[in-house]
Length: 222
Length: 141
Image 1 (cartoon, each protein chain N blue to C red):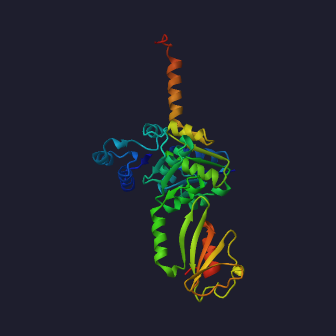
Image 2: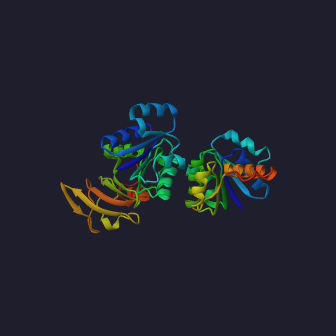
Image 3: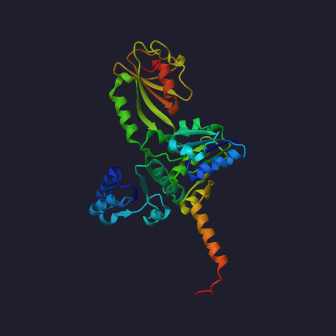
């Protein structure tokens, strides 16, 4: 497989090393002279010096072949977005994965069709939620293209949902309660299923409606 | 008419003043508070301090109600992304984006963005001036 990696910081250089070890062909683009020199010591001709947002630089790196994979992993979100757009829209690169440095910029990537993104901050926050069960709602899986998130919700004694039927919870449009895990068993949720304290509810919900779903089952966020 | 100008440098500030002089209600966005002085002591329009990638900044500048937007920060890629956000998210029909790199300006112009490339303009004007003020060389082979 041929891959272009744009940005030779910690992420770009480590990914390049791993891809090379896996036997793939890689070109790594780095603009900063000091970084380029260090990378060249390790990777030799795999590294190319230049601004990866310049179309001529990307072309010299072989964007026209096109590569099976492009990774836009610079420390600048605007750069990563533009690199991904040029690759996908201009050169038919099928797989462009972009790094999101600031999670607030995720919405721009989603809006502009760069659906495959990785954000370290968001991933770490997901783990924090997972490790802090009192939080009540854990994001298990984000389906970026669909705009949906699979979440797990822990119903407590004081939760508004406790003792109510699933059909009468007033969950947001587009959301579905899938199953409840109780006493070591999983049951699919029917409108008549009564929620009990201790239930772990698996749900699928449009990304923007998570707070609403949380309110419907758990009440106001603590 | 409501206009939003992102980036209050030499270009952005002059565009904002020009639109205001034509009666537009203009709000300018810049990361740097000091950039306000570029709009002059008589500036009556809006000024929001913040980054144009920040949707709360764009919204407080009135992006949702704007008829036109000009994006002219000092970063090509920043301008290209903000320009697309203004067009796609806030559905502003007239969005003009300054892009210094001719190749990227053309790439995005080919995909429906209104890009303005001062570099390309300078190249064209310089070439035209030299060509029109000097005798044509006999066709060199």
